[in-house]
Length: 472
Ligand SMILES: *[C@@H]1O[C@H](CO)[C@@H](O)[C@H](O)[C@H]1NC(C)=O
Ligand SMILES: *[C@@H]1O[C@H](CO)[C@@H](O)[C@H](O)[C@H]1NC(C)=O
Ligand SMILES: *[C@@H]1O[C@H](CO)[C@@H](O)[C@H](O)[C@H]1NC(C)=O
Ligand SMILES: *[C@@H]1O[C@H](CO)[C@@H](O)[C@H](O)[C@H]1NC(C)=O
Ligand SMILES: *[C@@H]1O[C@H](CO)[C@@H](O)[C@H](O)[C@H]1NC(C)=O
Ligand SMILES: *[C@@H]1O[C@H](CO)[C@@H](O)[C@H](O)[C@H]1NC(C)=O
Image (cartoon, rainbow, N blue to C red; front, side, top):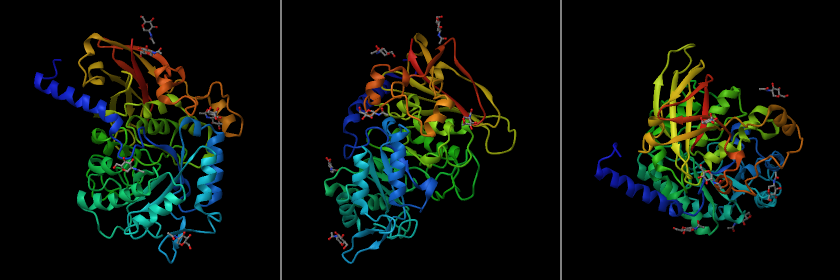
């Protein structure tokens, strides 16, 4: 109570009340009540797309148990078309997709997966194929007739129609309206790189929106091709080759605009792509989860190694991402720490966020290149709450029950899953599992936390310690 005047407390209560009722009505089309999960071919395959790649990958997604952990959207990225027919409709490249797009959708639906499609709000796509600007109705009609479930909508060759929120909004709304007119529920994912303050208008017309230039598989390497630094959330030159820490910094102030129905998209996951260390992959996946970014696998799932697989397959962390309240965690503090190898900024950060059932997620993020003992005080973790002095919590380590390397290794080599131990979100959605305190979603209790005993952990370099706090 001490933190608020009577007046502002009333405002806070009104606001919380709004959030509680908004959860069921906030989606502009009823989709995306939790962040989307799936696979997109771009990070691993770029333009090398065809039917075999999508269907082979979907097979593997099922076999690895990833579908039943929630990764449902199989998203085809750029370079799939061969132009427009005389009547103006987009045509799928018949060499790459000999049976057409509807066939791909049917096959995916037969496996209880969903089909994601790609286009650009421009004259051309980024790969130089026909874009959908001024063809919104025709293209949305094609997508719906192919039974597409999702559209990733890029920003290349936009003929200069950007620079103010109005110009970008208008361009992206045209496709939103066109999709709506088809009558088919299609998840709409904006890929306009965060230009023109997308996070302030995205939820009115879409289910998710990118907040930065394209990600690359680097933890924190500065790259001139991603010219806006991590604090520039109103970035005019989003670029590409953005590092994980760069994108996370841009996400830090944006949580307030995301929630059930519309999400800040920090771009596809680089776990299993490039040469991130295991600690970096754990940190990347943890942070994307807690800020409620979409979780879209960027790796070649046929070549996932056991450690990357066990990152993607951790239901305790996915359950944070899929928490029904959908509140992105907030960065509470950041501190520069002494540089060791001069590579990137050495910085440690505390992130914290409320969960649906009264639990709290806490991340101690070590962005420095040496291990650190990090400590989070309870009144920092619960900075927006007034219960701190009276309560105590049990901290559950969300990575403690990660699949053993030997188990993960046998699964990626084609061995069968032990279905009795594996979490199956198709059978038991995360909301139901959480309501039952399913132990597979809780990790391992490791510490008692209160005003007298702060949360403390030895955190590896470029790593994270991630906890769910439950009231004792
Ligand atoms: C346009 O032509 C293509 C190729 O001939 C055909 O597949 C498609 O159904 C046509 N679209 C419309 C809307 O008539
Ligand atoms: C179209 O939009 C209306 C609200 O504007 C919404 O109720 C409806 O579900 C949408 N339909 C589709 C297919 O997206
Ligand atoms: C996990 O197992 C794989 C395959 O057996 C091995 O190559 C790798 O070094 C192991 N990783 C760890 C972290 O133990
Ligand atoms: C998960 O549950 C669904 C529905 O019961 C079932 O069809 C599927 O085979 C299960 N998946 C695994 C990996 O056990
Ligand atoms: C789950 O745990 C919470 C405490 O975090 C408790 O209040 C609730 O009763 C438990 N639910 C079940 C079904 O055990
Ligand atoms: C929390 O404290 C209780 C009582 O002192 C103790 O029994 C329990 O083991 C502690 N739990 C953890 C996870 O440290």
